[in-house]
Length: 124
Image 1 (cartoon, one colour):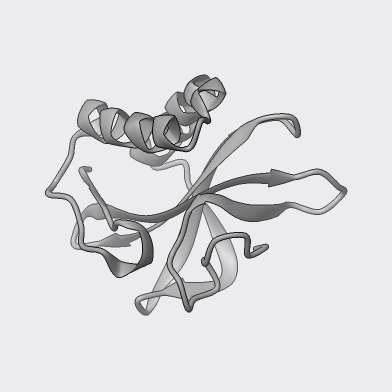
Image 2 (spheres, rainbow, N blue to C red):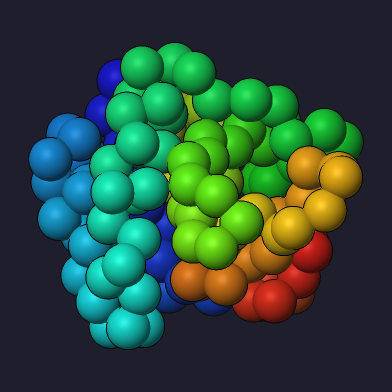
């Protein structure tokens, strides 16, 4: 299943990407934010998403679709990808990390979508 990445704050989208091209794109996003220490976690989260292992992010919807997330790492460094499925495409629209604590919570820290539950620094 290919991926389309929705750029931050509604600034367009990529074309259809296979996993290596999606990883290259997102590696550049991490590099721009000085977060290259998360590359191994990015790889693991992308593997989970592309292998169909994403988990529901209930009760959240984005563009009318149920939100899934794929996550890897620990409470020091991690990567969480937020996406939905549309016409057999993984539609990635936000990226963040785990928040330490007993609950599964995430903060949008890499990029998000302004004016939504997935805006920068928002907790999911």
